[in-house]
Structure formats: structure tokens, C-alpha cells
Length: 113
Image (cartoon, rainbow, N blue to C red; front, side):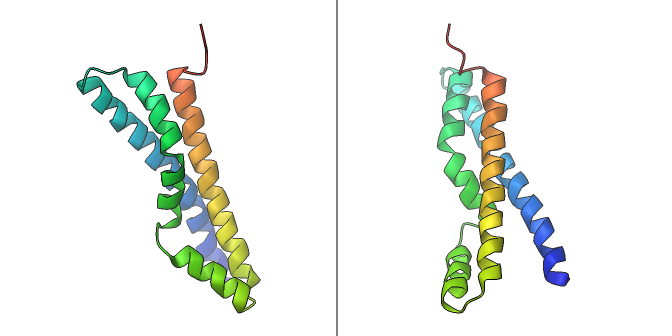
């Protein structure tokens, strides 16, 4: 019961950390592009695509704990840990994709004239 209760907050946090990293990085990067005389919306759209993988890495912790859990699951037969880690990664990927969708909607860069 306690393990399940601890997993749900981590699942939700993983999603929102990925969204926050992507949105924050793209917006701050666009501010830098604006201050340097570039096109902020185009830079924001480009940064959102570039930051997608880093948002996932930041959301799952960015350490080797993920690999340790997978190793423990494969070699010690703890498949429950593999499923949990997979769900956390899936949640982070969903958060990153949501962030990209928000930036794409905000910048309207996908619409060609």
C-alpha cells in the first residue's frame, strides 16, 4: 500500500517536471534570442524541440538510478520495478510532448504562409 501511495506522486511529478523544464527552457531561451536581436518565437519553437529529451532526463532524475532499477528488475526478477520505471519515463515523455504542443500552439510555427 505504501509503495503504491509513493508511486502516484512520483508519476504526477514526473509529468509536470517535464512540462516545466520544457516551457521554462523555451521561454527563457526565447528571451535570450530577443535580447540578442533574434526572432523569439522561432527560437522558442526550435528550443522546444531541442529540449524534449532533456526534459525527460530531468523528470526521471537524471541519474543512474533508472539503470539500477532496470538492472535489478532484469537480473533479480523484480519486474514490478521495471514497470514502474517504464511508467515514470512514459509520464515524463507525455509531459515533454504536452510542453511541445503548448509551445507549438503558442508560436504557431507549424503554420506555413
